[in-house]
Image 1 (tube, one colour):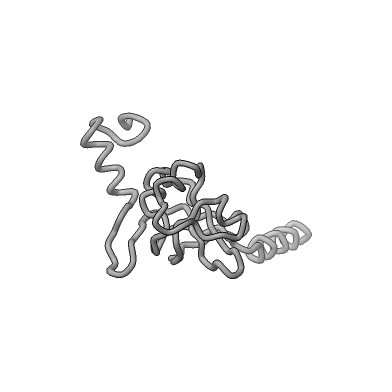
Image 2 (spheres, rainbow, N blue to C red; image 1 turned 90 degrees about the vertical axis):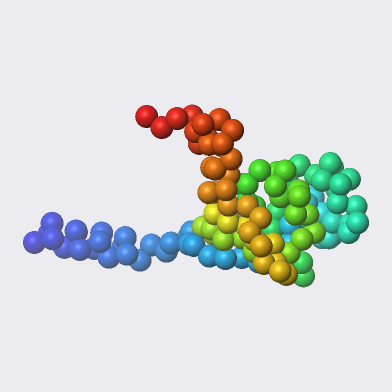
Length: 137
C-alpha cells in the first residue's frame, strides 16, 4: 500500500512540473546584442559596420520592454544578413533561458523563407556529401 501511495505521489508531482520549452512562432527584428542591452536599435543604414562590430545577434521582440531571444543554432552570418529586418522565427522557445532553437526563419512583408534546418542540411549534403558531423553510421 505504501509503495502504491509513493508511486502515485511521484507520478502526480511529475505531471505538475511545468514544461519550460514549447514549439512556437515568434516575430521581431534581428538586432545586435550590444544594441539591445544598451536600449538602442541598431542604426538603420549602417548594417555592415554594425555587423562587423557585433559578435552576437538576437531577435528583439519588444523594444519598449527589451524583450529578446537568442537563436543559438543559427550562424551569426545568417542573422547578420537580416539585421534590422522583421522576421518570424519558428522553433522551440525556452522563455526561462531566452532562447529559440529555430527550425525556420521567415522574412516578413512579404513572407519568404530565409533559412531552415532542412535548407542548411541540403547545403551540407551538396557540398560535403553528408550532413553536419559527417556521414551517419
